[in-house]
Structure formats: C-alpha cells, structure tokens
Length: 119
Image (cartoon, one colour):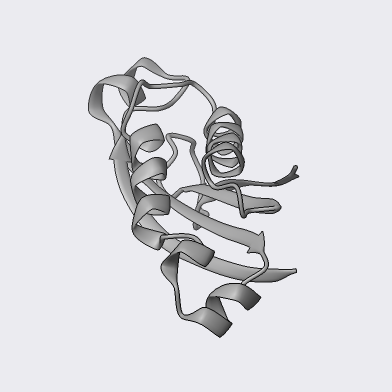
C-alpha cells in the first residue's frame, strides 16, 4: 500500500482532564499517514483519484478545534474514524496526536498517542 503523510499540523484547543486545560487551552500537533493506492492518481494526474490534502486538514481541524474531550485517545480515534469514513480510497490510517505541554511535572519533550486503524 502507498502512503501519504500529512504531518506537523498544529492546533490550539481546549481538550484535557483538568479544568485549567478546558479553560486556558493548549497546543496540539497531529500527524497522519494515509494508506491507499496512489497508482491511478500518478498515472492520470487527476486529484479525484487520490486524497485532497486540504480536505484532510479541514476534517482534522474540525475535530481538534471542536467540542472538547478529556483524552488524547479520544481525539486519535475520532480522527482515524473520520479519515476512513470520509475518504473512500483510504484503506488504513495512522494517527498521532501530540500534546507538547501537558500539565504534568517533570522534564520531557511531549506526550503522544499513536494508533493505526483500517477498514
């Protein structure tokens, strides 16, 4: 299966378990890997044969900037489900949601959840 990567998407949203996360908000980064055949698109040079990256971003933005949820796990599941249901040509998707600044003590780069789902 071929892969399309849409990485480094950045959003400001109000997801989290703690009340201050829901009130103050924080940064989130999202990466997706879309698995599909790109052969027809490559041979015909037609956008209709593949996935429109702008539409992928818009769908993810709607979830990330939409109604708050408590868990990053919920966000990853929603994004994966949306990609598989919205874009018929996608056979599988890997979604990684990164929380660069979670309100936990200690020194670290980020926390993240990554999942892979398929039809």
